[in-house]
Length: 232
Length: 266
Image 1 (cartoon, each protein chain N blue to C red):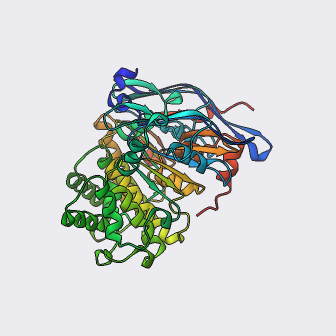
Image 2: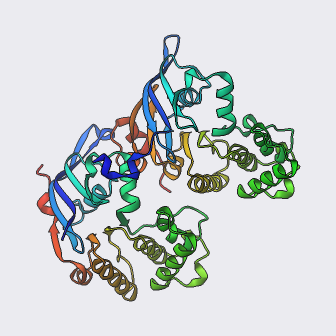
Image 3: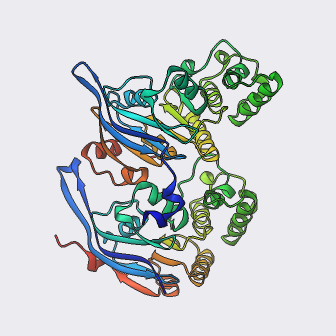
């Protein structure tokens, strides 16, 4: 299978100028590959840099050294050196990112929040809404809420809206940061099924999950992030 | 790799700025600014007052002549032209058709004593529309798009609230379907609740019309919501630039870190 993600020696250091220029080295020597259809779970204690690695793969955190190769439209692009507009293009077509937290624009109805990633790649509004409706039903958001903006929903409902939004696209790479945190057993199982379906469709997945059962259900491989700990 | 990247990188820049500078006597209000803007791209220029961001916006929109450097713009015929070489008539034509300019104070961008419909219709007449009924229909449909009750079409904007005036100014600017819109602190004088609605509206219109925009703001939340890219200015210089979420979530320069850390958590 083709490697969708090839990370070589990536590193991240924060320089805190407001704290007298303290250098906070987060990770160093990060190297791993993820193939199409494979799910790699990042493991390690809180603070080990798992989320930082996901953010580097998404281009949200800058990478201070090494290489983050992403297969984008069939070509390996080094995200550590990509132009902003290349990163945006990667996010539109190639990488989806699901966090626990929904960052919704005020006043936009839930169904459109979920459909938006499809509209961004040119899918017709009706079709995008239909697929959004399917997913919202799947994650058990009652239909009477679809026309309301999610800002007034409970934390769990917002998280499920976010999952629907994250899973709606056909991105070949998916990054998941604690997608099942604080979900009840029924909804957790739904997410596990959604992840399994993505794997069958050949999507390369990098995930952070603390729940042992979920990890066992989805992981093909575990990457121990503590081995990338930057020696002080 | 560029040739394989296809559409994403093959389209041509809309605006190219090289070494742009403006001095007032010995004061350098703006120094050595270079960047490229592509069609459909929204760039935010952030910084505190006095950082040179408003001067830069005036230089880019040819309202000020630079002391050094140049701004080039791809005209509708596809040719990239140095804006300093345009004649006055060409420059006015750009302003009336291909560009929009949204002022912080709507009174500067509107004619306060004539009707809302005339404010929107005026720009259409400037590009040759002359059928009263069609102009009125276009104005009315634009008022709807910016969420102004069409029953108010014959009222003058001085009878409007601040938020309505700002939305009317946006309608007036977008009616000619410009490709580039300059915005100077578009939410500056508005209440917080009104700001959210306006931002939401602008964000939707920018996406729908595939507009390029250059937005000057001191409000990082505005930059995050509206822009793809951000340029941070301090003392006339661009000190940091990049993808908006990257610069705001992983700021590198001391001054940018200070700006970001000064935001109150929601």
